[in-house]
Structures are given as C-alpha cells and as structure tokens.
Length: 112
Image (cartoon, helix red, strand yellow):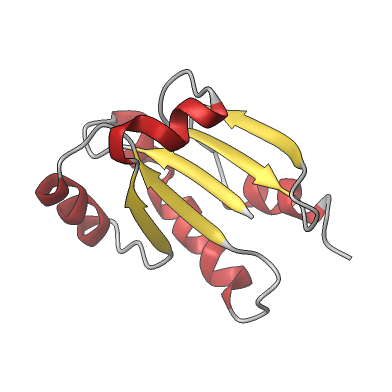
C-alpha cells in the first residue's frame, strides 16, 4: 500500500501529483498495489478541485480531525508511507517525489 498525505494548499504536493497518478496507473491493473490519498487539514471544495486539476484517480478521502495523520505522526505534507502485504511499514518518504521511477523503486522492494 502507498499512503500519501497531501493537501490542496500544499505546493510541494502539486509537484508530485502527476508522478503519483502515473505510478498508480502503472500498478492499477495488477491489483497488487493499492494507492490511497489522505487529504490533510483541507476543505472539501478545494480538495475536490485539486483531485480534478491533477487527474487523480486513486482513492482519496479526508483525514477527518487529523486522526489518521496523528496515528502516523506525520510532520507535514507531502508524506508517503509504504506498507507491505503484512501491514508492516517499510519506507517513509518525507517531501515530494522527484520521479515515477523513485516511487516504483520503493514499491519494488516488496513485490514478489
């Protein structure tokens, strides 16, 4: 699982939006990797506009009351957590991704 914390007001989040979507499209058909977005401290209209603007198609939802981000103890956005098939956190990326290949290389660490 790739769990990405983001917000519509976050400029670095905009830098990685296309890379996350492209990586999701790469893995989508295989059903081996799930991408989830957690919208952090945002409003619904702005969040929906952000998802539409960047063509994000993987599942996203609001982090109501910051319960999810508190559980992961995020420091800010963007932050992305990679969780293996056994529910074990194996990698944390703080800040934006620089390429699709960066995302794929982290995911590949746990794919058979």
